[in-house]
Structures are given as structure tokens and as C-alpha cells.
Length: 217
Image (cartoon, rainbow, N blue to C red; front, side):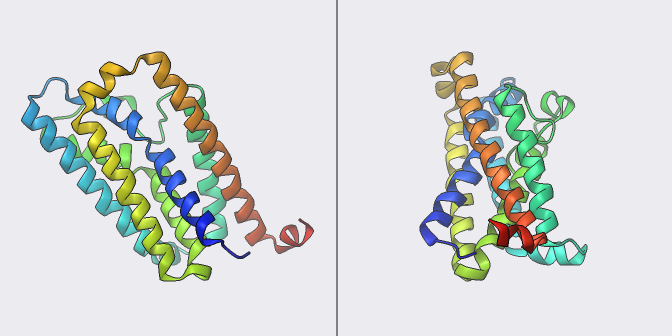
């Protein structure tokens, strides 16, 4: 199936933004760093976002090779990844912190020395859902757009991680202006978008695995 460049750009930026959820990451960041002074919190935010960016770019560039190494087909990864994203989206719709992104222990336990990498960078920002998303996006766009698909996905990662970093660095002001009711409303809307994206991933995976389904549509 041909990939329209504009649609691919829109899908890439939307998918990465929704799964990372900068506002949600900023609120978790505040809850985990409120005991630290301002300079330490700033360092944690920068280190977390930089680490997450590197991890996501590595999987975007080498994700296909990693799948080949473990003998996983793209169709299977699309279906499995879509199911994972669907479950994360449901958690967002019902205003839960997804255990696919962060466990309760990871959320509330951590030292200043390592909290930036674990759990903020991994798995809060660069979690299983985000890694799945960038690999599936590259697989979808590579055949039609070539190297352009890599540029689009890396740009989507850079844009979203950059927004997340800005939210973290200004977290106190952001959180003070957003009540719990407003946050839950935004989170649920993003969850609905994530569910729709997940279903699209599963449909494309099924069409690839079973060509007869694609012919029937």
C-alpha cells in the first residue's frame, strides 16, 4: 500500500507525541523530583530527555536489524505492538498510569543519581510503547519513502522529546495552571487517539501477514 508523504508525517508526529505524552511525563517528573533543589531538577530533566532521545533514535535506525536478529517479522511486531499500544491507550482513557510505562515502585523509588535514566528516560519517555511506535513507523514508510522515513521519524522524536524537556523545565508553572480534572480530560482524549492508532497498526499487520485480507478490503 502506497504511503502518502503528508499522511506519514502527520501519523509520525501524532503517534510519537501521543505515546510519550509530554504533559503526563511532566507531572510524573514533578512528583519524583519535588524533594530536590532547582539545579538538580534541571539536570535530571536534561539528562532524562537526552537519554530518551538517544535510545529512541537507536531503535528507529536499527530496529529492523534487531527484529531480524531475533527472527521477528514486521507483521508480528506490528500486531503485537498495536495490542500493547491499545492497552496503554485504554489505561489513558480510564485515567490510569500504565504499568507498561512505569510500575508503582519505579515511580516512587529512585535516587537523584539514577532517577533521570531510570525510570524517567526509560521507561517513562522511551518505554516499550514508544520503541514499538518508532520501529513500526519506520517499517511502514521505508519501502515508499526510503531514507525520508528515517528523517521524518527522527524529527518527530526530536520535536516531542524537546517539548517534553520544556514541560519538565517549566513543570512547576505548568502543573500549577492545570487541575486534575483538566489533566484527566486531556489524557483521555490522547488515550482515544492512541487506541485508534493502535487499531491501525494491528490492521496493517494483519494485512501484511494475511494478504487475502488486504485483497478483500
